[in-house]
Length: 384
Ligand code: GLN
Image (tube, rainbow, N blue to C red; front, side, top):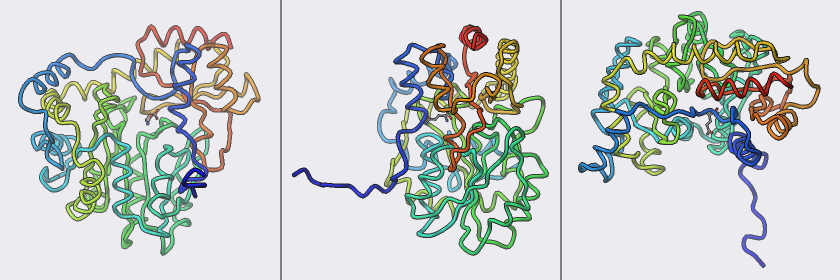
């Protein structure tokens, strides 16, 4: 008999993440992959040169557990210039193996058995499993298409004695909406005089369009004092495969975060951290990202204008939602499989981000692609 004869799964309802599934299907069918979010172009050449320099120098052993200090200092400077936040590089920033690890570690460091965590669905697919692995319970607030607006009075009704955390995500994946100042003020009111911790997933902080402002919780001292803020160099510097991100939190929360981080990854890729510390000096590279991706959003939009897809509003991120209700009444999962196989373009079905799998015939395209790729994809999508 094989041992163990049966495994009592800790995540019985979780399969392989949709990003892996769709990228594999795209590869199998040689389709243009607009599903999993990653650029099809290279990072800045200077960033690659800096990695090589660091590698050929003497930087191939463990980085400090919390991250390379000059990198943390650059991040603290950025938080101050952009959001007016005073963050201690030494005790309030940790470099992580990407945004997902930062999210997982933040959740694990504070969530206990039976704690409740409020999530906004469609929610990034790692949030709820992370909460459940920590013994907590994910409580879903359903945002509704096409605006995906939060009604904070309704959120209030979800809060009770067991509520330990609220996870927000702005710019929001997959909807492409962003929270406004008024939302942050409502959130402030909601959590004041409570012990609720916030986890603010801001990995698309530099991808905000139409001159809108990114509302980082770091702009709001009353929120920042109880928040883990997560960001990602993968999104900002076109290096999703390097898996480097970071978490900012006040000292007391960060101390708990590091207790988990040190026994999970210990420390993160040294040479990439050194390169990011250098490239962060070139502020224009992240400040230009808004207009770089706004051009791509607009290019893609124009290119599929004559198709039968209806595009939803996209205020940030590199994702464009599209309704296919004029094309088909298939379930979104079947629809994306079919267009991947038959039409040669892969996308992400939005129902997978809902606990209820509620399906509004909406799919997500990633436009972090060369214009040529977007053009070819649009030609194919126009034929559907
Ligand atoms: N964040 C990316 C997306 O939404 C994917 C990340 C991943 O594949 N783990 O597509």
